[in-house]
Image (tube, rainbow, N blue to C red):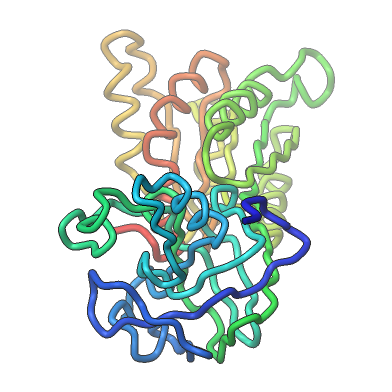
Length: 317
């Protein structure tokens, strides 16, 4: 029994359907996918968990651990598609799979165990699906056949930090707040299931340059933009004004909470005009220009950051 993932050879081992939830699925020669998921399957619907996937390699490992030497078969864990060659413990939400003529987008990693509502759990007291399975929604409909080739496309999470500072831009001093944001975000995403990519831009205090950089970033499908600098009430503090005019909507609660949290300790923090906003599917956060401030802000923003990303892509609640 080969338990290794041969990532060069990705294909469908089995396609499976069940008429009722909480039961094992029955292997088929092919399945049809539409906008609601697998046609004829109990889990089909207008939600994000339309199609479930599980690797044969993980099923085999689970079988080896069973005290009764039970060999578990494709479909028994209620997965719609049993695969070979893909380690689902490495995929991220928003990654895509092309299988036959269809396209799927990963929408959830693992799940909570249903306990008595799960046929395998009732039989052996545990299940592999909660930790090793993934769920997807249908992007392109069509037919999936047993033995179809699978193409996997990791989806990078693009994060850009923009520092606005005349003095840093002209070399009078080193920008420290921008690199600090990058450092903190890298630490945060290090053990998360995202393919994070980072970009950095240093700008002079110029409204036109900032607006152009924002437009370019959104056109390049950057997911999250952090600006630092220009959030006060001074003559050159225009960052929130440019961003608010550029964006589709603001998210006032995030920054209001941060200002109030630090007011007793740092009364001047209430003067910050820091801003959180959305343009298309890009989150934008305008932070103050000091290293200490960005540390405080990032600590709070990361509490809701992943959920905000999911909401923008129709996956949050």
